[in-house]
Every structure is written in C-alpha cells, then in structure tokens.
Image (cartoon, rainbow, N blue to C red):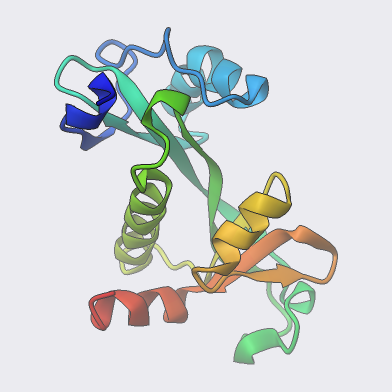
Length: 174
C-alpha cells in the first residue's frame, strides 16, 4: 500500500504559510510552477482563490482555483435563455491538479464537486450564471464533459456548465 493511500485529506482554503507545495508534482510543469510560485501572490491580490486538499501536516495532494469572469452570451450555443445584450457573469474554474502520488483515489472528482459546490453557494451571494473551464487537453475535456460541461463553439477545450444545472445537481444530492 502506498503511504498516500492511508492519509486523510481535508479541503482547505489555500494558505501560503501552512501548505507545503515543495514536493507537489502533478506531472505538468506549468501547474506545478503555478502552485509553487504564483498562487500565493494571486490569492493575496484577490485575483483568484485557491483551495487545496491537504493532509494534517499541510502536504498538498491537489488544488483548484476559482475566480470571477465574463462570457458573451453569443458564445453559448442557443443562449440558454440568458439576456443577449449583456455579458454573463461566470465562475472560472481556472486550474485543477492532483499530485501523482495521490492519483487513482478520485481526488480530481472530489475537488471538482467541491469547486461546483462553492460556485453554487457563492452564486447565491454574487450572481454567476455559468461555470467555465479551459480543459488542458482531450482527457481533461472528457473529464469535465462527464459532469455536464459543454464545449463552446470558439474552442473545444473552453467549456461551460450553466449554474442552474450545477444547482440541480446539489439539490438532487448527486
């Protein structure tokens, strides 16, 4: 059994002083570097909010980020009944990554569900009509598609999920 299999992980808001990012390796250099060098600064400047799955000692097993965005209604096929004249406020799921040592435990799904839950809860305070994500590759696109995200016509990897759909998932107790 891998030592990481027995570790209890908790979802926490990112804390640069508490969370050990030094050993994090998801296999994608850009995501590793972002966690280690940029997330703290962006978090502090209110550009994004980071959330981590971490053990009691602060070792990061995975992370995701959320921030606000805007999307033109015309970008969404069929418009989903949104007013055409205004841009839609969105919640951007900017990054999501799992350390290689923790793969195969469903942590990507766990973090996505938590990100959607936070987006739904936040949308009750600050309006957000859509959750959007930029999948990094075809595998990531298939992952998000499995949860109801749809590709936008401008780019297959640029995907969205209406907030109303996400809200229904939590009301039905997915």
